Image 1 (tube, helix red, strand yellow):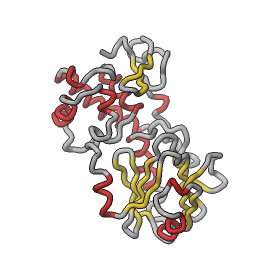
Image 2: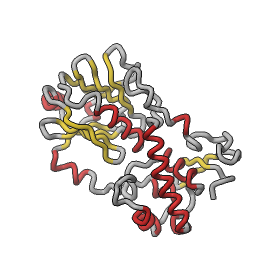
Image 3: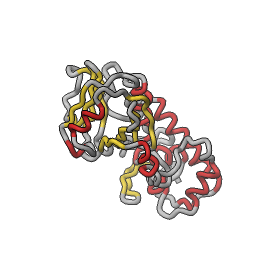
Image 4: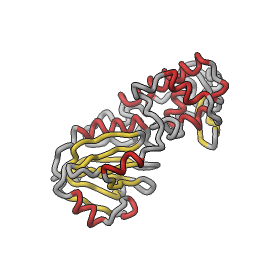
Length: 269
């Protein structure tokens, strides 16, 4: 599932590709992927432009010139592609938005969605989300205070969107590895220095993953050499049985809080 780095990468790239471009057509092949009738969806978007592309947690927000916002959550299996009809990959497209000869294709929206939301509805929609990892006010003391008394494991709390916004299975494991902590540890068991390491690792790993385009397996557009660049840089995620890059031990997969998790037992405590 795309996480903060993947969605932030999409936001940055799409801001240079579709902002202020006229929407010339839409096509919806799966009505359940949107929240209004497809003909109304087309009438609403056609002739509009996208004023800006923003991100909140794992969501992308496309603000239309009319004031409404398209809220995208890709969920598991969702992916984006921007290009001409001839360039489109052989993947099932549930929604596409045309900008002249090029289209923004929303692919794999079986669990995900693209909803039209009025401006006044955005704040309530995201009211239960926790703080963004890079919010200036989300300092190390605020991070420690937020996690220290919580039950569950580091894994379950890092992926809980009401605790922190934007982290999922992949980066929770990468963050714990960078901090030298087992994902199964309880927050209450951490010492102050370990909370500090975890906080710094969170910011370091998310920044690095964003810089290298996240781990998505398909370019956003033809010639895109950034998207997916972090996949080969993952230290533990999906590397079961491989040697640890830090100590040479063996990466293992464990089920932590009913979620798959990867770590190196030799150098994570």
